[in-house]
Length: 256
Length: 366
Image (cartoon, rainbow over all chains, first blue to last red; front, side, top):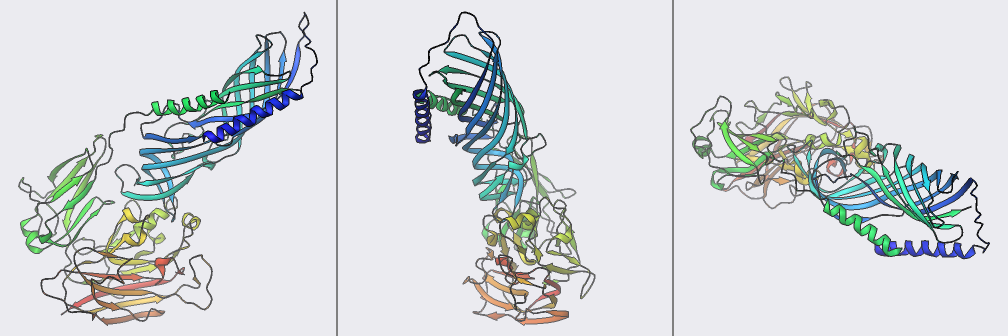
């Protein structure tokens, strides 16, 4: 996992350096009076985070590993700054949000399918591996604050539409109680689950972040987006607790 | 930058670990093992977890005197013994039985550590009185809607793959007809007979490559815990028996389904499905299963129906047991009868629709 991250970071830094090297050296155009401006930006980065409950239920006993997966984020932002410091921005982004988590659960209510055709609704105890990889088109809307030449902050909300969903995994080395904790015990060597189709297609949440100039037109940015709508409908029985998209985008923005 | 990111991720994992809460209290309430003095047993104890009933196979003396079981339960749970319905018994460690019905005079209530759930286990001694079956009395499982035959004293001697198929049928409307073993009124004698019909896999089972479920029934028990990990070990064949069996007789009808298919569901030209029916006598009290019923050296006698082809009308059979060695006085035995509407059903081959009907079975003793 560290190797992957290192590679990602190096890649991004490299891109940033290259882009800033391409910058021409036109002089700064700081004038005494500020005129309202429209700014266009290309945003590119990677999402790190989790589709997770805000507080882990007590049926999750141990997190054995976490990997963010390859989750690019690419978008365009239109910002309007009527005053020197304050403004507003709207964007459109293609966001992959995902992760792979390995954990151990106890009496965990869920639904699983076994290799030879069984399906169970019941309480599972054992190991679990979950992979999430969802693609959203999201529209972030923010208020921006530009205190100086170097920094820009933004805070707002987003709406996102799911157009490709993956939420799958397997459970192993355990047992399930068919129907509930007093149902019959069925040993599970390995079984899979796939909840991709059960996911809600619309997500809405808060987002906010900061960017710092590193070149004439290039900035590095960090942006936290926090989903406020559980990714599964409340009628869904595969997970008995609400899960939210909580992701940090790390990347660059390029002013065009 | 790189470091910062690594720190972020590390912090995230760290914070997740910190969020791990105290373990929930155990919600389970099982009798895990139920041990009876080996000398009193004629067959191994079977705990039917789906019905919360414990089937004992004990000597007539133990039935009269009662037994002192050694019970283990789910860790943290508590167990209490209460009178079973109208049956009363003196308070002691001994579990007494009604000698006519075989029902224990007491039952066990296991309460989970979390206090929220409990299970009530009933205990009964299962005896095979007369080795004759007319399949007149059937019960429908309340939850899964499959049928199984019961004896006159309501004991359960026969089992089938139905409990396993119940799981493959999850999400489809359940009725006795959906299962490969059920009662039919198309009987040779009396009002009922046992009908086995090979059925197509379910949408769910197709996904994992099971295209067919053969109809089956057998003297024995179905161990649901193994239904998925090791399906061939889930079918536990045999009930306690005397050693002096001579012949296996009865009546059957068989209609093979239209197209024979292989494991992948491809039609195999020129091949017709056949049924399978056999009885096996073996030593010991531990049941054999589908992995070793044909190979175990504990088997001492077999009676196998040679002709598994189509029989439109009721056809009688009378098969002598062929012994590999003589039964010895003092040895313990178990006897299994195994029937299937597709003889290669254990490898998911056969013809959908193949129908085997059995009636008036008997094991003739010396």
